[in-house]
Length: 363
Image 1 (cartoon, rainbow, N blue to C red):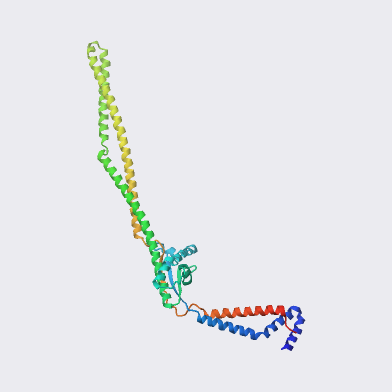
Image 2 (image 1 turned 90 degrees about the vertical axis):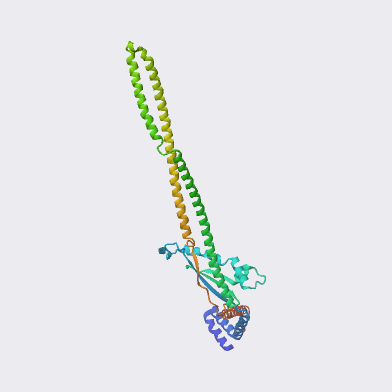
């Protein structure tokens, strides 16, 4: 073997120092193949023994589909944007709730051993919304496969219930607010109807108009009499025989003038009052129509909210409750053995490399 190595060294010199060092290094590793093999076998045996001695744990997985709101258009249900799918990750918080997990731990009597709920949850529970899908996966890792399946099924059920409860609470809040608005608009409508009835009973529509027309007719007649009286006065003033009739005519004319002034004032007052009443009636009529429209709109919205309660938010549905796992998820014997073998080889070769660099190969 030493002669062969000499030959390799001589041949390696033809390629310079780098080629010679490479051949020397390979030869150095060949001399220690037994050590390398022993280290590999030892690492494999040790990893195998440790893996077999470690407690087994089983992982059960349940799947939940997050369905879009029932009120959505069917044509848009299939065209879901990536932003919307990413927003569904908020439902991970429902399954990861500390309160929910603590209830599951108490229900299945899991050993806490002085650990906090958060640290235990990190070891037992895993929740993940599958990328670019509407699927929420919940996994539980426990020493007993049956308990693992029951645990994850319980968490999935409670997640669905928690989501429905949150949606129901939101619906109740929205419906309560809509009911309050409907009550306010109905009360406003009743007040407007009462005001309309009161003004209709107190001031019948068009009650002043006949009075105004009668006063106008009477004013015309009085004015005509006044004109005749003034004409008689002018005529009698020119005739001396009728001089004694003038005081009576003048008194009659003065009385007619007073009557004309009173009628004009009364007509003006009644016209102003009629205009004011018409404006008040119009204002109350506008308020009544607005109150009717608001009341009908609020009542329709309240009916719609009650009819669509529970359909406006996403709905969670369990599509796979999971099965009892048949094989343990940990320890992963193959992975542990492969990792130990790789680590042992890398560590040993690194040590041999350092030894070769500092000691070289003996002549």
